[in-house]
Picture 1 (cartoon, helix red, strand yellow):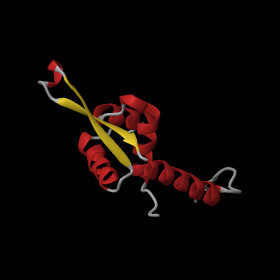
Picture 2 (picture 1 turned 120 degrees about the horizontal axis):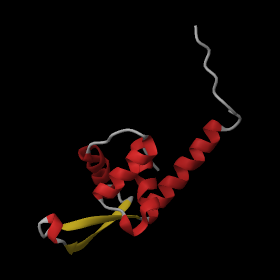
Picture 3 (picture 1 turned 120 degrees about the vertical axis):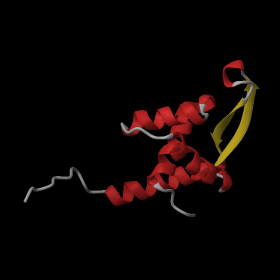
Picture 4 (picture 1 turned 30 degrees about the vertical axis):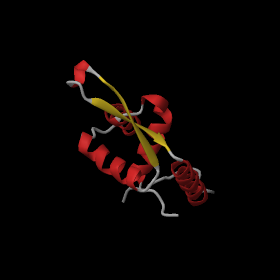
Length: 108
């Protein structure tokens, strides 16, 4: 299994956190909340498209809404492969961080 990139991991975890409310803008807001950084919508949709193409997320369309000019929201949810990918990256992170209590950087 290919390891997730950090942004893929963050996006998948955001989708998991949002549950049935996971669509482009809500995922972006969750990523911003988690990272404390401003993310352009395109920086979210690129990885989301790859995650969908690779079978990690499934999509469904909501009902058309007047505030979106009659367009439908695309909702995302994790597939079994997406859940397994998160389990694997969590395992790798746990192994690599094992025994490291706190990072202390010395200024030179």
